[in-house]
Image (tube, rainbow, N blue to C red; front, side):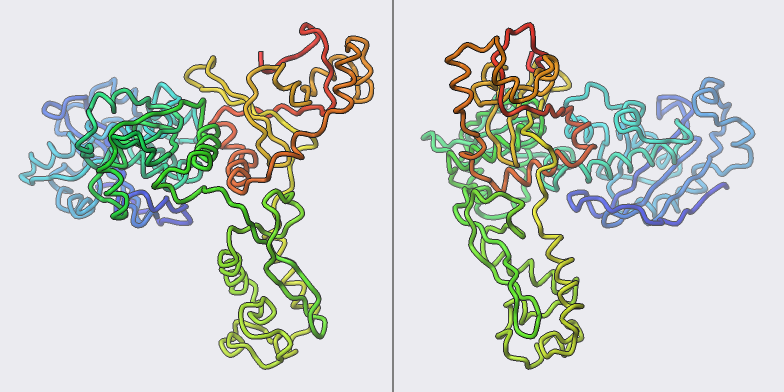
Length: 539
Protein backbone atom coordinates (compact mmCIF):
# COMPACT_ATOMS: atom_id res chain seq x y z
CA UNK A 1 0.00 0.00 0.00
CA UNK A 2 1.31 3.41 -0.90
CA UNK A 3 -0.28 5.89 1.48
CA UNK A 4 1.07 9.32 2.35
CA UNK A 5 0.08 11.49 5.29
CA UNK A 6 1.09 15.13 4.96
CA UNK A 7 1.10 17.75 7.73
CA UNK A 8 -1.43 20.50 7.33
CA UNK A 9 1.19 23.24 7.59
CA UNK A 10 -0.08 26.80 7.41
CA UNK A 11 -3.07 26.29 5.11
CA UNK A 12 -5.46 29.22 5.13
CA UNK A 13 -8.85 28.65 6.71
CA UNK A 14 -12.06 28.65 4.69
CA UNK A 15 -15.04 30.86 5.36
CA UNK A 16 -17.37 29.59 8.11
CA UNK A 17 -20.04 29.44 5.40
CA UNK A 18 -18.52 26.10 4.35
CA UNK A 19 -19.64 23.00 6.28
CA UNK A 20 -17.43 22.25 9.29
CA UNK A 21 -16.40 18.74 8.20
CA UNK A 22 -15.44 18.21 4.57
CA UNK A 23 -13.72 15.45 2.63
CA UNK A 24 -12.32 16.71 -0.66
CA UNK A 25 -11.82 13.63 -2.81
CA UNK A 26 -10.65 12.86 -6.30
CA UNK A 27 -10.49 9.47 -8.01
CA UNK A 28 -8.57 8.26 -11.04
CA UNK A 29 -10.27 5.30 -12.70
CA UNK A 30 -9.91 2.80 -15.54
CA UNK A 31 -12.88 4.37 -17.34
CA UNK A 32 -16.07 6.34 -16.95
CA UNK A 33 -18.66 3.76 -15.81
CA UNK A 34 -18.72 2.74 -12.13
CA UNK A 35 -20.38 -0.62 -12.85
CA UNK A 36 -17.70 -1.64 -15.35
CA UNK A 37 -14.56 0.23 -14.34
CA UNK A 38 -12.47 0.49 -11.18
CA UNK A 39 -10.67 3.10 -9.08
CA UNK A 40 -6.87 3.13 -9.43
CA UNK A 41 -6.00 6.13 -7.23
CA UNK A 42 -7.69 8.11 -4.46
CA UNK A 43 -6.59 11.52 -3.20
CA UNK A 44 -8.22 12.91 -0.07
CA UNK A 45 -8.11 16.15 1.89
CA UNK A 46 -9.87 16.14 5.27
CA UNK A 47 -11.00 19.60 6.42
CA UNK A 48 -12.20 20.51 9.89
CA UNK A 49 -13.53 24.00 10.60
CA UNK A 50 -12.00 25.34 7.42
CA UNK A 51 -8.48 23.95 7.91
CA UNK A 52 -6.84 20.92 6.30
CA UNK A 53 -6.17 18.33 9.01
CA UNK A 54 -5.01 15.44 6.81
CA UNK A 55 -3.81 14.73 3.29
CA UNK A 56 -4.06 11.12 2.17
CA UNK A 57 -3.34 9.30 -1.09
CA UNK A 58 -3.17 5.72 -2.22
CA UNK A 59 -2.90 3.73 -5.43
CA UNK A 60 -5.19 0.72 -5.84
CA UNK A 61 -4.99 -2.56 -7.70
CA UNK A 62 -7.93 -2.41 -10.15
CA UNK A 63 -7.75 -6.18 -10.69
CA UNK A 64 -7.79 -5.64 -14.43
CA UNK A 65 -5.66 -4.22 -17.22
CA UNK A 66 -4.97 -0.48 -17.06
CA UNK A 67 -6.03 0.98 -20.43
CA UNK A 68 -3.20 2.78 -22.31
CA UNK A 69 -5.28 5.95 -22.73
CA UNK A 70 -5.58 6.22 -18.93
CA UNK A 71 -1.80 5.98 -18.64
CA UNK A 72 -1.46 8.69 -21.28
CA UNK A 73 -3.98 10.93 -19.49
CA UNK A 74 -2.81 10.45 -15.89
CA UNK A 75 0.77 9.29 -16.10
CA UNK A 76 -0.14 6.25 -13.96
CA UNK A 77 1.56 3.12 -15.32
CA UNK A 78 0.89 -0.58 -14.62
CA UNK A 79 4.14 -0.95 -12.57
CA UNK A 80 2.90 1.82 -10.25
CA UNK A 81 -0.17 -0.31 -9.43
CA UNK A 82 1.75 -3.56 -8.88
CA UNK A 83 1.48 -4.85 -5.30
CA UNK A 84 -0.93 -2.07 -4.35
CA UNK A 85 -3.96 -2.89 -2.15
CA UNK A 86 -7.35 -3.67 -3.55
CA UNK A 87 -10.18 -1.33 -2.60
CA UNK A 88 -11.64 -3.89 -0.18
CA UNK A 89 -8.40 -3.78 1.81
CA UNK A 90 -8.61 -0.03 2.45
CA UNK A 91 -12.42 0.19 2.60
CA UNK A 92 -12.69 0.23 6.40
CA UNK A 93 -10.04 2.91 6.88
CA UNK A 94 -11.50 5.03 4.07
CA UNK A 95 -15.01 4.71 5.49
CA UNK A 96 -13.70 5.94 8.86
CA UNK A 97 -12.09 8.96 7.22
CA UNK A 98 -15.29 9.84 5.35
CA UNK A 99 -17.62 9.32 8.31
CA UNK A 100 -19.89 12.30 9.13
CA UNK A 101 -18.30 14.46 6.42
CA UNK A 102 -19.63 16.20 3.34
CA UNK A 103 -18.32 14.37 0.28
CA UNK A 104 -16.77 17.07 -1.97
CA UNK A 105 -15.59 16.45 -5.51
CA UNK A 106 -15.35 18.17 -8.85
CA UNK A 107 -18.32 16.63 -10.63
CA UNK A 108 -19.31 14.90 -7.40
CA UNK A 109 -21.71 12.57 -9.17
CA UNK A 110 -18.77 10.87 -10.92
CA UNK A 111 -16.49 10.38 -7.90
CA UNK A 112 -19.32 9.59 -5.50
CA UNK A 113 -20.69 6.98 -7.91
CA UNK A 114 -17.33 5.22 -8.13
CA UNK A 115 -16.65 5.30 -4.37
CA UNK A 116 -20.17 4.10 -3.51
CA UNK A 117 -19.93 1.26 -6.04
CA UNK A 118 -16.49 0.20 -4.75
CA UNK A 119 -17.87 0.13 -1.21
CA UNK A 120 -20.78 -2.03 -2.38
CA UNK A 121 -18.31 -4.51 -3.92
CA UNK A 122 -16.63 -4.67 -0.52
CA UNK A 123 -19.96 -5.38 1.18
CA UNK A 124 -20.30 -1.90 2.74
CA UNK A 125 -23.27 0.41 2.39
CA UNK A 126 -22.03 3.96 1.94
CA UNK A 127 -24.13 7.13 1.85
CA UNK A 128 -23.02 10.74 2.23
CA UNK A 129 -24.26 14.22 1.49
CA UNK A 130 -22.36 15.60 -1.49
CA UNK A 131 -21.05 19.01 -2.50
CA UNK A 132 -20.17 19.41 -6.16
CA UNK A 133 -17.45 22.00 -6.71
CA UNK A 134 -18.52 22.34 -10.35
CA UNK A 135 -21.95 23.52 -9.17
CA UNK A 136 -20.23 25.76 -6.61
CA UNK A 137 -18.13 27.36 -9.36
CA UNK A 138 -21.17 27.85 -11.59
CA UNK A 139 -23.12 29.50 -8.77
CA UNK A 140 -20.31 31.82 -7.65
CA UNK A 141 -18.76 32.59 -11.05
CA UNK A 142 -21.69 32.63 -13.50
CA UNK A 143 -19.79 34.99 -15.81
CA UNK A 144 -17.63 32.04 -16.95
CA UNK A 145 -18.99 29.45 -19.35
CA UNK A 146 -16.77 26.51 -18.41
CA UNK A 147 -15.95 25.19 -14.93
CA UNK A 148 -13.67 22.19 -15.40
CA UNK A 149 -10.47 21.90 -13.41
CA UNK A 150 -8.39 23.08 -16.38
CA UNK A 151 -10.54 26.19 -16.72
CA UNK A 152 -10.32 26.92 -12.97
CA UNK A 153 -6.54 26.56 -13.07
CA UNK A 154 -6.41 29.03 -15.95
CA UNK A 155 -8.96 31.39 -14.37
CA UNK A 156 -6.94 31.88 -11.19
CA UNK A 157 -3.47 31.04 -12.53
CA UNK A 158 -3.16 28.17 -10.07
CA UNK A 159 -0.07 26.00 -10.20
CA UNK A 160 -0.37 22.21 -10.37
CA UNK A 161 2.43 19.67 -10.58
CA UNK A 162 0.56 16.60 -11.81
CA UNK A 163 -2.72 17.25 -13.60
CA UNK A 164 -5.08 14.23 -13.62
CA UNK A 165 -3.53 12.86 -10.45
CA UNK A 166 -5.89 12.41 -7.54
CA UNK A 167 -4.28 14.44 -4.75
CA UNK A 168 -3.16 17.25 -7.07
CA UNK A 169 -6.65 17.62 -8.52
CA UNK A 170 -8.18 17.60 -5.03
CA UNK A 171 -5.77 20.42 -4.11
CA UNK A 172 -7.25 22.52 -6.93
CA UNK A 173 -10.69 22.23 -5.32
CA UNK A 174 -9.16 23.41 -2.05
CA UNK A 175 -7.47 26.34 -3.81
CA UNK A 176 -10.81 27.25 -5.44
CA UNK A 177 -12.48 27.34 -2.02
CA UNK A 178 -9.64 29.39 -0.49
CA UNK A 179 -9.62 31.88 -3.36
CA UNK A 180 -13.40 32.22 -3.14
CA UNK A 181 -13.10 32.88 0.61
CA UNK A 182 -10.72 35.73 -0.23
CA UNK A 183 -12.91 37.19 -2.96
CA UNK A 184 -16.43 36.94 -1.54
CA UNK A 185 -18.28 37.61 1.69
CA UNK A 186 -19.62 34.86 3.96
CA UNK A 187 -23.14 35.77 2.83
CA UNK A 188 -22.28 35.42 -0.86
CA UNK A 189 -20.57 32.08 -0.26
CA UNK A 190 -23.55 30.85 1.74
CA UNK A 191 -25.92 31.78 -1.08
CA UNK A 192 -23.83 29.67 -3.47
CA UNK A 193 -23.49 26.69 -1.12
CA UNK A 194 -27.01 26.50 0.34
CA UNK A 195 -28.91 25.49 -2.82
CA UNK A 196 -26.32 22.77 -3.49
CA UNK A 197 -26.50 21.31 0.02
CA UNK A 198 -30.21 21.77 0.70
CA UNK A 199 -33.53 21.46 -1.10
CA UNK A 200 -35.21 24.86 -0.73
CA UNK A 201 -38.94 25.11 -0.17
CA UNK A 202 -40.59 27.96 -2.01
CA UNK A 203 -43.01 30.26 -0.16
CA UNK A 204 -46.64 29.28 -0.78
CA UNK A 205 -47.39 32.38 -2.90
CA UNK A 206 -44.38 31.89 -5.23
CA UNK A 207 -44.64 29.90 -8.43
CA UNK A 208 -41.69 27.94 -9.81
CA UNK A 209 -41.95 29.94 -13.06
CA UNK A 210 -41.00 33.10 -11.15
CA UNK A 211 -37.81 31.45 -9.96
CA UNK A 212 -36.94 30.24 -13.46
CA UNK A 213 -37.27 33.83 -14.69
CA UNK A 214 -34.51 34.97 -12.33
CA UNK A 215 -31.12 35.26 -14.05
CA UNK A 216 -28.04 33.37 -12.95
CA UNK A 217 -26.09 36.60 -13.10
CA UNK A 218 -25.13 39.60 -10.99
CA UNK A 219 -27.61 42.21 -9.87
CA UNK A 220 -30.11 43.34 -7.25
CA UNK A 221 -33.36 41.57 -6.36
CA UNK A 222 -36.54 42.82 -4.69
CA UNK A 223 -39.12 40.94 -2.59
CA UNK A 224 -42.74 42.24 -2.54
CA UNK A 225 -45.87 41.11 -0.72
CA UNK A 226 -49.33 40.73 -2.31
CA UNK A 227 -50.10 44.44 -1.85
CA UNK A 228 -46.92 45.53 -3.57
CA UNK A 229 -45.12 46.55 -0.36
CA UNK A 230 -41.38 46.25 -0.72
CA UNK A 231 -40.13 43.75 1.86
CA UNK A 232 -36.47 43.30 1.09
CA UNK A 233 -33.67 44.33 -1.28
CA UNK A 234 -30.57 42.19 -1.73
CA UNK A 235 -27.72 41.70 -4.16
CA UNK A 236 -25.76 38.77 -5.51
CA UNK A 237 -23.38 37.71 -8.22
CA UNK A 238 -25.98 35.00 -8.96
CA UNK A 239 -29.49 36.34 -8.39
CA UNK A 240 -31.32 33.03 -8.73
CA UNK A 241 -29.00 31.17 -6.34
CA UNK A 242 -29.17 33.95 -3.76
CA UNK A 243 -32.97 34.20 -3.89
CA UNK A 244 -33.31 30.42 -3.48
CA UNK A 245 -30.92 30.48 -0.51
CA UNK A 246 -33.50 32.58 1.37
CA UNK A 247 -35.93 29.69 1.31
CA UNK A 248 -34.04 26.89 3.01
CA UNK A 249 -35.46 25.54 6.26
CA UNK A 250 -32.64 26.88 8.47
CA UNK A 251 -34.01 30.38 9.00
CA UNK A 252 -31.53 32.58 10.82
CA UNK A 253 -34.30 34.44 12.65
CA UNK A 254 -38.05 34.47 13.17
CA UNK A 255 -38.22 37.75 11.23
CA UNK A 256 -36.70 36.06 8.20
CA UNK A 257 -39.28 33.28 8.40
CA UNK A 258 -42.13 35.82 8.67
CA UNK A 259 -40.77 37.81 5.72
CA UNK A 260 -40.39 34.72 3.53
CA UNK A 261 -43.99 33.73 4.19
CA UNK A 262 -45.12 37.16 2.96
CA UNK A 263 -43.16 37.13 -0.30
CA UNK A 264 -45.57 37.08 -3.24
CA UNK A 265 -43.33 38.04 -6.17
CA UNK A 266 -39.81 39.03 -7.14
CA UNK A 267 -38.25 41.70 -9.27
CA UNK A 268 -34.63 42.30 -10.19
CA UNK A 269 -32.16 44.61 -11.92
CA UNK A 270 -29.17 43.15 -13.74
CA UNK A 271 -25.71 44.64 -13.35
CA UNK A 272 -22.57 43.73 -15.29
CA UNK A 273 -20.83 42.50 -12.15
CA UNK A 274 -20.47 42.43 -8.39
CA UNK A 275 -19.30 46.04 -7.98
CA UNK A 276 -22.39 47.43 -9.67
CA UNK A 277 -24.61 45.07 -7.67
CA UNK A 278 -23.15 46.22 -4.35
CA UNK A 279 -23.37 49.92 -5.24
CA UNK A 280 -26.94 49.56 -6.50
CA UNK A 281 -28.04 47.60 -3.44
CA UNK A 282 -26.62 50.26 -1.13
CA UNK A 283 -28.41 53.00 -3.06
CA UNK A 284 -31.75 51.19 -3.31
CA UNK A 285 -31.96 50.28 0.37
CA UNK A 286 -31.36 53.90 1.38
CA UNK A 287 -33.76 55.20 -1.27
CA UNK A 288 -36.59 52.71 -0.73
CA UNK A 289 -36.20 51.74 2.98
CA UNK A 290 -37.55 48.15 2.65
CA UNK A 291 -39.32 46.75 5.70
CA UNK A 292 -36.86 43.96 6.48
CA UNK A 293 -33.52 45.53 5.61
CA UNK A 294 -31.61 46.66 8.68
CA UNK A 295 -28.12 47.25 7.40
CA UNK A 296 -27.14 49.93 4.90
CA UNK A 297 -29.76 52.41 6.12
CA UNK A 298 -28.65 55.97 5.45
CA UNK A 299 -26.31 57.16 8.22
CA UNK A 300 -26.87 60.80 9.09
CA UNK A 301 -24.28 60.91 11.86
CA UNK A 302 -20.81 59.37 11.93
CA UNK A 303 -18.27 59.26 14.72
CA UNK A 304 -14.49 59.34 14.71
CA UNK A 305 -11.56 59.60 17.11
CA UNK A 306 -9.89 62.80 18.28
CA UNK A 307 -6.42 62.78 19.84
CA UNK A 308 -5.78 65.39 22.55
CA UNK A 309 -2.98 66.09 25.00
CA UNK A 310 -3.76 64.79 28.47
CA UNK A 311 -2.18 65.12 31.90
CA UNK A 312 1.55 64.45 32.31
CA UNK A 313 2.17 64.23 28.56
CA UNK A 314 -0.06 61.21 27.82
CA UNK A 315 -2.29 61.51 24.76
CA UNK A 316 -5.99 60.77 25.17
CA UNK A 317 -8.65 59.57 22.77
CA UNK A 318 -12.16 60.94 22.66
CA UNK A 319 -15.06 60.02 20.38
CA UNK A 320 -16.50 62.91 18.44
CA UNK A 321 -19.35 63.34 15.99
CA UNK A 322 -18.34 64.21 12.46
CA UNK A 323 -20.23 65.29 9.36
CA UNK A 324 -21.47 62.46 7.19
CA UNK A 325 -19.83 64.11 4.19
CA UNK A 326 -16.45 64.39 5.93
CA UNK A 327 -13.50 63.76 3.62
CA UNK A 328 -12.13 60.34 4.67
CA UNK A 329 -8.50 61.39 5.16
CA UNK A 330 -9.62 64.06 7.63
CA UNK A 331 -10.90 61.48 10.12
CA UNK A 332 -9.32 58.84 12.32
CA UNK A 333 -11.83 56.08 11.93
CA UNK A 334 -15.48 56.45 10.97
CA UNK A 335 -18.19 54.61 12.88
CA UNK A 336 -21.98 54.53 12.83
CA UNK A 337 -22.35 55.02 16.57
CA UNK A 338 -20.29 55.84 19.69
CA UNK A 339 -20.82 52.23 20.77
CA UNK A 340 -19.14 50.91 17.62
CA UNK A 341 -16.26 53.34 18.11
CA UNK A 342 -15.89 52.31 21.76
CA UNK A 343 -15.90 48.61 20.89
CA UNK A 344 -13.09 49.18 18.41
CA UNK A 345 -11.10 51.03 21.09
CA UNK A 346 -11.46 48.03 23.40
CA UNK A 347 -10.01 45.79 20.67
CA UNK A 348 -7.13 48.22 20.10
CA UNK A 349 -6.46 48.32 23.84
CA UNK A 350 -6.10 44.52 23.83
CA UNK A 351 -3.81 44.54 20.80
CA UNK A 352 -1.55 47.42 21.90
CA UNK A 353 -1.79 47.33 25.72
CA UNK A 354 -3.46 50.73 25.85
CA UNK A 355 -5.03 52.18 28.98
CA UNK A 356 -8.82 52.19 29.29
CA UNK A 357 -8.68 55.43 31.28
CA UNK A 358 -6.76 57.32 28.61
CA UNK A 359 -9.12 55.89 25.99
CA UNK A 360 -12.11 57.25 27.89
CA UNK A 361 -13.56 53.80 28.50
CA UNK A 362 -13.01 53.60 32.27
CA UNK A 363 -12.93 56.27 34.98
CA UNK A 364 -11.28 59.67 34.51
CA UNK A 365 -7.81 60.19 32.96
CA UNK A 366 -6.75 62.68 35.63
CA UNK A 367 -7.37 60.15 38.40
CA UNK A 368 -3.97 58.46 38.61
CA UNK A 369 -5.12 55.32 40.38
CA UNK A 370 -4.39 52.10 38.46
CA UNK A 371 -7.05 50.98 36.02
CA UNK A 372 -8.53 47.50 36.34
CA UNK A 373 -6.55 46.21 33.34
CA UNK A 374 -3.33 47.21 35.09
CA UNK A 375 -4.02 44.47 37.62
CA UNK A 376 -4.44 42.00 34.75
CA UNK A 377 -1.13 43.15 33.20
CA UNK A 378 -3.02 44.31 30.10
CA UNK A 379 -1.93 47.93 30.70
CA UNK A 380 1.70 48.99 31.18
CA UNK A 381 0.77 51.60 33.77
CA UNK A 382 0.22 54.84 31.91
CA UNK A 383 -2.81 55.40 34.16
CA UNK A 384 -0.52 55.75 37.22
CA UNK A 385 2.49 57.28 35.49
CA UNK A 386 4.48 54.04 35.55
CA UNK A 387 5.10 54.02 31.78
CA UNK A 388 6.99 56.84 30.01
CA UNK A 389 4.58 59.03 28.00
CA UNK A 390 6.74 58.68 24.89
CA UNK A 391 6.39 54.88 24.89
CA UNK A 392 2.63 54.96 25.43
CA UNK A 393 2.07 57.68 22.82
CA UNK A 394 4.13 55.75 20.25
CA UNK A 395 1.95 52.65 20.64
CA UNK A 396 -1.19 54.76 20.50
CA UNK A 397 0.04 56.36 17.27
CA UNK A 398 0.53 52.94 15.66
CA UNK A 399 -2.97 51.89 16.75
CA UNK A 400 -4.55 55.07 15.41
CA UNK A 401 -2.72 54.80 12.09
CA UNK A 402 -4.52 51.50 11.56
CA UNK A 403 -7.84 53.34 11.97
CA UNK A 404 -6.95 56.14 9.57
CA UNK A 405 -9.19 55.90 6.56
CA UNK A 406 -7.29 55.07 3.41
CA UNK A 407 -6.45 58.03 1.20
CA UNK A 408 -7.91 58.17 -2.30
CA UNK A 409 -5.40 56.11 -4.34
CA UNK A 410 -5.62 58.17 -7.54
CA UNK A 411 -4.43 61.63 -8.53
CA UNK A 412 -7.70 62.40 -10.27
CA UNK A 413 -11.36 61.39 -10.34
CA UNK A 414 -11.84 58.10 -12.18
CA UNK A 415 -14.37 56.17 -14.20
CA UNK A 416 -14.53 52.48 -13.27
CA UNK A 417 -15.45 50.41 -16.31
CA UNK A 418 -17.43 47.27 -15.48
CA UNK A 419 -18.32 44.74 -18.14
CA UNK A 420 -20.09 41.40 -18.00
CA UNK A 421 -17.43 38.83 -19.07
CA UNK A 422 -20.20 36.66 -20.52
CA UNK A 423 -21.61 39.55 -22.58
CA UNK A 424 -19.10 42.30 -23.33
CA UNK A 425 -21.85 44.53 -24.75
CA UNK A 426 -23.43 44.72 -21.28
CA UNK A 427 -21.39 47.34 -19.47
CA UNK A 428 -21.56 50.11 -16.91
CA UNK A 429 -19.32 53.06 -16.05
CA UNK A 430 -19.10 54.38 -12.48
CA UNK A 431 -17.90 57.92 -11.81
CA UNK A 432 -16.01 58.14 -8.51
CA UNK A 433 -13.93 60.83 -6.81
CA UNK A 434 -12.41 60.86 -3.32
CA UNK A 435 -14.42 57.70 -2.48
CA UNK A 436 -17.64 59.56 -3.39
CA UNK A 437 -19.88 57.80 -5.87
CA UNK A 438 -21.09 60.39 -8.37
CA UNK A 439 -23.27 58.01 -10.39
CA UNK A 440 -23.34 55.97 -13.56
CA UNK A 441 -22.09 57.45 -16.81
CA UNK A 442 -23.79 56.22 -19.95
CA UNK A 443 -21.70 58.03 -22.56
CA UNK A 444 -18.96 60.61 -23.09
CA UNK A 445 -21.45 63.46 -23.24
CA UNK A 446 -22.80 62.61 -19.79
CA UNK A 447 -19.25 62.57 -18.46
CA UNK A 448 -18.59 66.05 -19.83
CA UNK A 449 -21.83 67.27 -18.24
CA UNK A 450 -20.30 66.27 -14.92
CA UNK A 451 -17.30 68.45 -15.71
CA UNK A 452 -14.74 65.77 -16.64
CA UNK A 453 -12.90 64.44 -19.65
CA UNK A 454 -10.86 61.29 -20.01
CA UNK A 455 -7.21 62.02 -19.41
CA UNK A 456 -6.29 60.07 -22.52
CA UNK A 457 -8.41 62.42 -24.62
CA UNK A 458 -6.61 65.54 -23.43
CA UNK A 459 -3.27 63.80 -23.78
CA UNK A 460 -4.14 62.88 -27.37
CA UNK A 461 -4.60 66.56 -28.11
CA UNK A 462 -1.41 67.42 -26.23
CA UNK A 463 -3.25 69.78 -23.85
CA UNK A 464 -2.90 70.45 -20.17
CA UNK A 465 -5.90 71.70 -18.17
CA UNK A 466 -5.29 75.40 -18.84
CA UNK A 467 -4.78 74.81 -22.56
CA UNK A 468 -7.86 72.61 -22.76
CA UNK A 469 -9.99 75.41 -21.36
CA UNK A 470 -8.77 77.75 -24.15
CA UNK A 471 -8.92 75.22 -26.96
CA UNK A 472 -10.22 76.80 -30.19
CA UNK A 473 -12.70 73.97 -30.73
CA UNK A 474 -14.67 75.30 -27.74
CA UNK A 475 -17.37 77.80 -28.52
CA UNK A 476 -17.68 80.86 -26.29
CA UNK A 477 -20.73 79.64 -24.37
CA UNK A 478 -19.15 76.27 -23.64
CA UNK A 479 -15.88 77.84 -22.53
CA UNK A 480 -17.71 80.16 -20.16
CA UNK A 481 -19.71 77.29 -18.70
CA UNK A 482 -16.60 75.19 -18.17
CA UNK A 483 -14.68 77.97 -16.48
CA UNK A 484 -17.48 78.38 -13.92
CA UNK A 485 -18.21 74.68 -13.52
CA UNK A 486 -18.12 73.61 -9.87
CA UNK A 487 -16.63 70.34 -8.69
CA UNK A 488 -19.51 67.84 -8.52
CA UNK A 489 -17.70 65.82 -5.85
CA UNK A 490 -18.10 68.78 -3.52
CA UNK A 491 -21.88 68.17 -3.57
CA UNK A 492 -21.76 64.38 -3.13
CA UNK A 493 -21.79 63.23 0.46
CA UNK A 494 -19.25 60.72 1.63
CA UNK A 495 -21.04 57.40 2.20
CA UNK A 496 -19.38 54.92 4.57
CA UNK A 497 -20.97 51.93 2.85
CA UNK A 498 -19.78 53.07 -0.58
CA UNK A 499 -16.30 53.64 0.85
CA UNK A 500 -16.11 50.05 2.10
CA UNK A 501 -17.52 48.68 -1.19
CA UNK A 502 -14.95 50.56 -3.25
CA UNK A 503 -12.16 49.46 -0.91
CA UNK A 504 -13.05 45.81 -1.53
CA UNK A 505 -12.46 46.27 -5.24
CA UNK A 506 -10.07 49.12 -6.04
CA UNK A 507 -7.30 48.01 -3.67
CA UNK A 508 -7.46 44.29 -4.51
CA UNK A 509 -5.94 43.26 -7.86
CA UNK A 510 -7.62 39.83 -7.65
CA UNK A 511 -11.04 41.46 -7.35
CA UNK A 512 -10.30 43.82 -10.23
CA UNK A 513 -9.20 40.92 -12.43
CA UNK A 514 -11.98 38.45 -11.66
CA UNK A 515 -14.62 41.18 -12.07
CA UNK A 516 -13.12 42.54 -15.29
CA UNK A 517 -12.79 46.09 -13.93
CA UNK A 518 -10.72 48.85 -15.50
CA UNK A 519 -9.98 52.29 -14.08
CA UNK A 520 -9.82 55.34 -16.37
CA UNK A 521 -8.31 58.55 -14.91
CA UNK A 522 -10.07 61.83 -15.68
CA UNK A 523 -9.06 65.42 -16.20
CA UNK A 524 -11.16 67.90 -14.25
CA UNK A 525 -11.42 70.76 -16.74
CA UNK A 526 -12.83 69.10 -19.86
CA UNK A 527 -12.76 70.13 -23.49
CA UNK A 528 -15.75 69.90 -25.83
CA UNK A 529 -13.77 68.69 -28.84
CA UNK A 530 -14.96 66.97 -31.98
CA UNK A 531 -15.79 63.31 -31.36
CA UNK A 532 -13.01 62.06 -33.66
CA UNK A 533 -10.43 63.75 -31.44
CA UNK A 534 -11.22 61.51 -28.49
CA UNK A 535 -9.97 58.16 -27.31
CA UNK A 536 -13.27 57.22 -25.74
CA UNK A 537 -13.36 54.22 -23.36
CA UNK A 538 -17.14 54.56 -23.31
CA UNK A 539 -17.38 53.83 -26.97
